[in-house]
Every structure is written in structure tokens, then in C-alpha cells.
Image 1 (cartoon, rainbow over the protein chains, first blue to last red):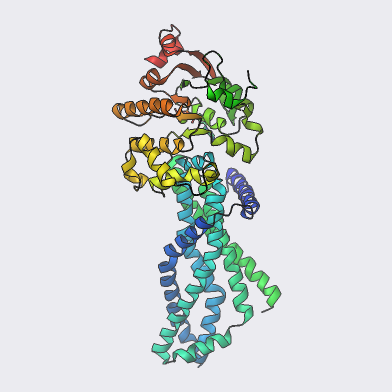
Image 2 (cartoon, rainbow over the protein chains, first blue to last red):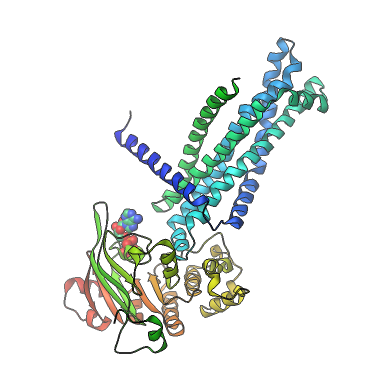
Length: 256
Length: 260
Ligand SMILES: Nc1ncnc2c1ncn2[C@@H]1O[C@H](COP(=O)(O)OP(=O)(O)OP(=O)(O)O)[C@@H](O)[C@H]1O
Ligand SMILES: [Mg+2]
């Protein structure tokens, strides 16, 4: 059953989110740049997600290789393993799964952190003491996420390829050199560039939604939990939409 | 009287001519259908402690948030030290805010920062007020001393008790040496003994820093000790004004309800 109020609040939310995005672009280029806080946030994101991304990436590599291997074996095409696995990891699976994992961690973290700062009036206190809280808290976090998610994805991709190599080494006795030779031969600009570009958008979306939910948090501690929760849901949904758009656009430009 | 230069007054406070630090006229604010303030007036004169009392949810917090531009009123005028808050641009507003200390109802300490960083935070925008190679540590220590908590300088807010948090929050507002301090329920959530300490501290602050203070509370004991004048906020308007002694003797039902 679709509730009319739900639809209404959905569109209100889209409106507010675009206002929030607009405000971000207005303030991001204005002085003063909170460089110290930006670096602090970058470190936070990296530090919080490093291990998680490593483990996720490794498991992606193992699983994909294990599952693809028998199929290719049937056609006697094991030699194609490195190219196939690397293309699917770099182009699609790596960016999407790693961004989703990080979204769970970072968007909810930002939602909860800013949300509790809002309900305990810390954001108001900042404003009264002459620091623009939007610049200090929101802009730094969104920029940090935009810069850090691509780095985390590249890191996760590398670990995933390494995981895949381990399976190939155990099952097919492929050497490290041979494996990665094949990988780099298979990958083209048309795979790497669009896949990297879209991760910047993923990072932006994660930071934006986390901050948006936290910054407009209300209703005390209940609201903080809700902000954290709905930040993850909305961020994940946005990631899929962005990924769809990215694949669509890539298809037009690179005509693969 | 309104156009007097501020620094002349600062030099020699006159007893007769009372300069209004804050002047609110016909302030109105509603959230949707919920009318909170409905024509509220207030004058805060230089050097005085004015207490505003009102039941929970009558819009006391909304009123002082309007004073520092955190909430935009629907109509009415708010002048702080001769400047109309509503018409200021961001830079002018931030400048004016350095002269106003705001003690939030829940202390609002930044809980990801140490006590030292909390106190240094308001200074970041106002370094230009001080010399180039100005030593913040000394100022932070000195301000912490005036609330009696110098030993907490490297603790996190989560390691402090409610009363200590309130004092640190007060120190954070004092560090810029404001001319006006707005207290939003300085004693709420504290036990009677700690409340007394905070009230005592507020009086010390007034003596030491020569501030004017607007104090919001529903703590009768607090009001009796600190107030020089009181305003009772009922149904969005100032229902009654006077000293504590005058108001507590009143026969009016609504006024008596405050002092029971
Ligand atoms: N941002 C807001 N949006 C909507 N309604 C609000 C907002 N802020 C306050 N209100 C409403 O305004 C009314 C007055 O709130 P306010 O916080 O000023 O009360 P108060 O007098 O400070 O009470 P207390 O003594 O409990 O602190 C309440 O009904 C509250 O629901
Ligand atoms: Mg209040």
C-alpha cells in the first residue's frame, strides 16, 4: 500500500537534499578553508574503513575466482581467468561493494555524530562562537569522503586481485608475474577511468547523505538513531542509482 | 540616550542613565500552528541581572536563540547594543556575537574535543583580537581558574560531571570577555548544592567581568539570589515585571503559581 504522506515526504526530502547540495557548492570554494579539520576527517575515514575494506576486498577476490573457475574450466578457458576476474572487479564489483561497505560505516557514523551534535546544541554553540558549522563540519566531511572513497576502492581492488591470484596460484599454479601480466593486459582505459571517476561520485554521495541526515536531526536521542539508520539506507540507494547512471554514460562514451 | 557612544559609558557607569544592552519589542514566533512568542517585550540594562521565568515549553529558549540570530523571528525588533540583529549580515552578526556569551541549557561542550580545545575553539575566529604571538594556554588556564577547574584542562567532556560541564561551558563563553551573557537554565539538571555553586559563580562572574546577564530559569532559588529584576513569561507575552520581592508578594493566581 502506498501512503500519500510518504510520497509527499519523499519529495520534500529530495527538495531539502538538493538545497543542502546547493549550499555545499556555495560554501566549498569560500574562505577560510578548514584544512586542518579536512585532513583530520580524511584520516578518520581512512582509519575507520581501512581494515574493513581490506577484508571485504580479499573475500571478493576469493569468492569471484572460486565461483568463476569451474565455468571457465568447462570450456578449457582457465587462461582467461585473470582478465575476466580483473575486469569484473575493477569495473563493477569492487567499486560497488566497497562503496556499500564504506557507506554502512561512514554515512552512519556521520549521521550519528552530527545528529548528536545537533540535538545537544553543539552545532548552535559553534555558530554562536563565530565558526560557520556548515563549513567546519559538513564541507570538510563531504570533501574528505569524496577524496577518500576512491583511494579506499583502489586499495580494495588491489587486495581483491591479490585474493584472486592466491586462488589461481593454489588451483592453477599460476605465477605472480604471469597473473598480473595478464591482468594489466586485459585492463584498458575504458575500464579504469570510468570506474575511478564514479567512485568520486560515490564518495560524494556517502558524505552528503551522512551529513544531511545528521545536520537536520531532531527529536533528541531517538532522532540520532534514526538519522544514522536512514543515512545508510539513503546512501546505499543513491549508490545504486549513481552506478546505474555511470554504467549508462560509460556505455555511450566508450561504447563497450 | 540611544545614540550615546559605547566607550564613554564603559569608562564611567552612570547610575541614573541606564543604557539598554538588549531591547526586544513585540517579538513574535510560531512554528507552524504552534504560536510560541506572541508580542514579547524586554529591556536588559547595562550591568544588571535580569531573570526571565516561565513554565517548560513557553518559549524561553526560543526567545534567547532569537537574540543571537540562531532562530529567525516572524516579526518584531531585536536590538543588541544598538544593532538590529535581524538586519545584520553574517560578518556583522559574528562580530556582535563575540560580545554575547551563550550558556546552553545542556552545556553543549564539543564532546570530540578536550577541555582545552573546547576553550580554544571560540578563539580561532578571534585571534586578531589579540597579539600575533599570543599565548592561548595562559588565557585558557586563567579562564579555567576563574571557574575553579584548572586541573581538568586535558580531560574529555565525557569524564566530567554535569556541574563541571556547566562550569566549563561558562568558561568557554567567558574566554572572549563578552559584555552580555545569556544563561539558558544554568541550574537545570543539577542537584541543589551544585546549583548553589553555579549561582555563586554567576555572581562572581558579574563582579569580575562586569557583564550584563539575561538568565532564564524556573528555579525559584536561583531567581531569588541572582535577580535584580524579573520578567514572567506566560502565553508568549511578558505577563509581569518587577523585583523578586514584589512579584513573590503578588495576589495574582498566575504569578503565585511560579513561587509555590
Ligand atoms: N526548532 C523548532 N521547531 C519547531 N518547534 C520548536 C522548535 N524549537 C522550539 N519549538 C517549540 O517551541 C516551544 C517552546 O520551546 P522552548 O525550547 O523555547 O521552551 P522552553 O521555554 O525553553 O522550555 P524548557 O524550560 O523546557 O527549556 C515548544 O513547544 C517547542 O516544541
Ligand atoms: Mg529551554
